[in-house]
Structure formats: C-alpha cells, structure tokens
Image (cartoon, rainbow, N blue to C red):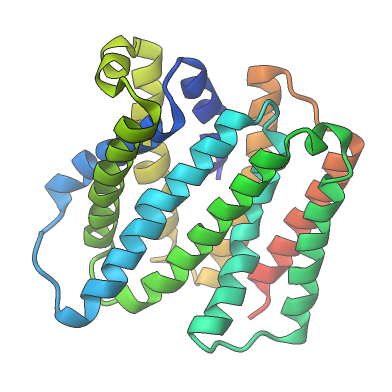
Length: 273
C-alpha cells in the first residue's frame, strides 16, 4: 500500500520535471511491458476472450493512466485526488452489479452511499473547490479502474501476466499516439527528459505497477481476498503522508473528515462479503 500510495506524489514530481501527463502514462506502460516480457508466453487467445481483452486493455492501460496523470497535472494539491481514487471500490461493486448481476446487500449500499457523501463533503473545502477539474478526472480514473476489474472477471482463465502485458503494450501505443496528437513535440520532450524524470518513470512502471501489485498477488496465495483487500484503504493514508513530506501539503479539517468517511466506508465495503 505504501508503493501504491506513492504513485500520486511521485507522479507529481515527474510531471514537475516537464514530462507531460499523457507521455508519462505512455512511458510507464512501456516500462511495465518491458518488465513483463521475460515472464510472459504470448499467444492468440480464444475468440471469446478477444473483446474482453481489448476492453480491459483500453480501460486499464489507456483510460486509467490518461485520467490519473491528467488529474495530477491539473491539481495543485494531492489530497483530494488521493482520497477520490478510493471510489474505485464502490464503482467496481456497482458495475459488477450491472454487468455481472452480482447482488449488493443493503449494508454495502450504506457504505457505497457514505463513500460518495465523503467525496461530496470534500467539495465544500474551499481549496478543493478550486481543484474541481482534478476531482472530476480522478473520479473518471476510479470509474475506469473499477470497470477494468469487472472486465477482468471474464479473463480469469488467462495468465494475469499476459493480460497485464496486453494492457501495457496497448496503453503505450495509444497514449504515445495521443501524446503526439495533443501534447506535440514528443520526440523533443523525450530527448530533454532529465535523469530525475526517467527515475520517476521507472519507479512508476517497475516498482508501483510491477512490484507493488505483485506483493498483493503474492499475499493472495496464502490469504483470502477478504483479508487482503481491506488494506487497500491504507494507500491514501501513505499518499497523504508522502505528500506532506515531499510537498509540505497539510490537509484541511474538511479534507481530513471527508477522507476518514471515504476510507472507512471503503474499508468496510471490502470487509462485507
């Protein structure tokens, strides 16, 4: 959770190194793909997996990175978007109900509603009100992250390294094209990225995407999902702590209160079976 929470302040550092957001997302996905190549056996999957695999790759590889780094780029403070990313869980549960016909108990609905109320409370913070675009973008990121997890249920028979490799190479090519189209001068920007910028790219791809997630998947070998997933609520805590040490950012009372409501709601959402 420390590694996952560090994605926000380290992402901000990278964007401060004059790497535009779409290009940063593309480079991150490129690093992920390079890290996965030695461990993947590439093949053409059965026809029934093609559409879900494409959908998963676009949602997880393209949309998540696009909205994540654009939200970081347009935001001057990280607390609201770090907390807002927790909406991944309620979005995922709602979407699984719609597309997978999974039932949602009344207890889950209570915590889904309270998690959204916590985000609404954040909107009353004057500092957060100035970051409205960043908040909208991080909500879009959470939606597509939740949607990608729902789609992945249709790919559970495939090796997770293969599906993530497909998502990363798809994300790299589409985002690099977007970078050329909308950010311009991509080649010149690549030539001018300094060592600190490249270190942040490598950290995002190799440490956060590969190492951080692999540690969670390793735990799933020994513990049920219900015991591991609630710890997901800790990543914004680490994100806020790191934002304080790296940028001196101190959340307001309203932000802390809304954050507690959101994080607590997500924690209990993960606990309820």
